[in-house]
Image 1 (cartoon, helix red, strand yellow):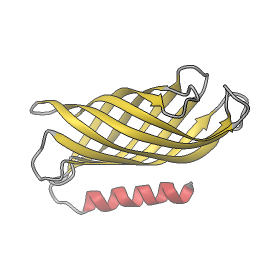
Image 2 (spheres, one colour; image 1 turned 180 degrees about the vertical axis):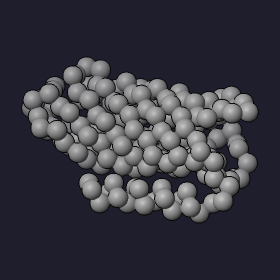
Image 3 (tube, helix red, strand yellow; image 1 turned 180 degrees about the horizontal axis):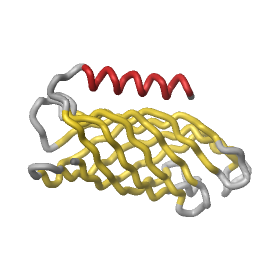
Image 4 (cartoon, rainbow, N blue to C red; image 1 turned 90 degrees about the vertical axis):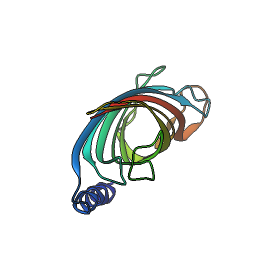
Length: 170
């Protein structure tokens, strides 16, 4: 996990130094993740991120959040590298996003676990002003958390979710 974290920091540094037109940017979002594996592990998510804007990248930087499982007293704290682009130097209605990092998972009765956090997504601009952008995004989330399932006598080997997010960036 330390190697993954160092790679994320290195990628962020390279991205920031590769463009002379980079400007500081930050944002926040709220959303929900629906469990796709029928383990009753749906979440309420909040997140914040900071980094920079560049001509081809709408945003590149680091983010963190809290994913709180609604039916269990579990929490996940993702820390990730985030890259967002509309595949054009001009803003477009649709954009793609990728989040890669680690999640610190706290499960009641289990030791704290750190694992892979992966979240590719597709977003749509809602409102664009002089200093802000709001968006709606749908994405797939994979968290490599492993623990005994609360519903059946099996072990969960990773969480798979469909995530719907409402956010704003400045």
